Length: 92
Image 1 (tube, rainbow, N blue to C red):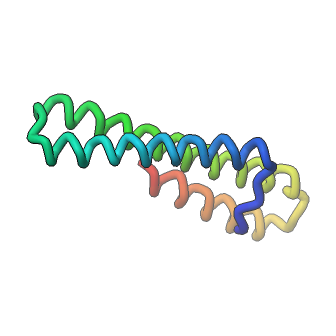
Image 2: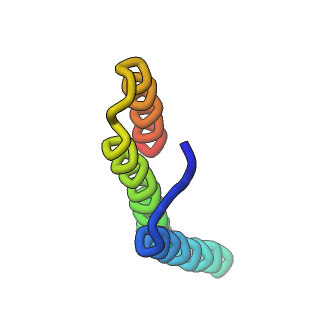
């Protein structure tokens, strides 16, 4: 399945990934500075959520394209469903 996203969808995902990148840089800096463990974990959780949201946005776009192109054979639909389920579970 190719990553085929509209410009606005792509911009949103890239913004989420850039935000996560900035947060991760901050986490690294916090660890290097010996910051409080609770603060570090809180920021790591924020990074994780940002990455998850970007991943789900990519998968949702794939689902949207699958539904739009969903007039295929039942075997093709079953294969696509299995692939999308595997992608969702990889983010769990």
